[in-house]
Image 1 (tube, rainbow, N blue to C red):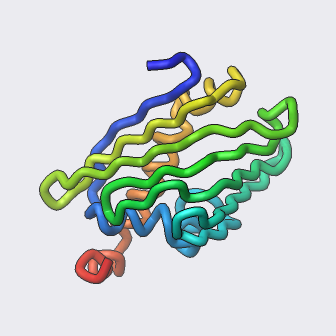
Image 2: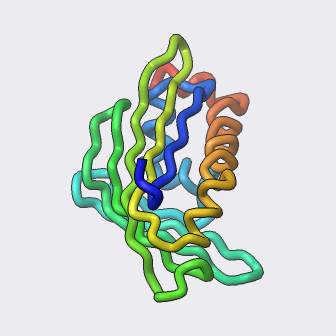
Length: 150
């Protein structure tokens, strides 16, 4: 693996349908990844995420490059914020989903992380924390009924 990439694999207590929806539905994105989120989940469709913190706003924009329903998402990932000293950093995020019984094995491959500070934040668990939040949202009471509809 390249030194400018981070690879995370884990098992989530949610179906691939639920996990796919969590990545492509703005309302769900707001609940687990960024309080301000917009998503137009179609090939070439844009997305925007914003998290405000004391050190400044963290904004990610990009577009969906590949969408294979309930299996794979590839998106550009353009970060603007305190860890992007040159203004913007463009990366690529690939999310692969594999059914694992009633659960999902998710594999994230975040590549072209050219800024060492940003990459270190990712390596130290930014995606692990985000996936914990996703799983908590998807396993909340009331979400169970959504498993059959997702």
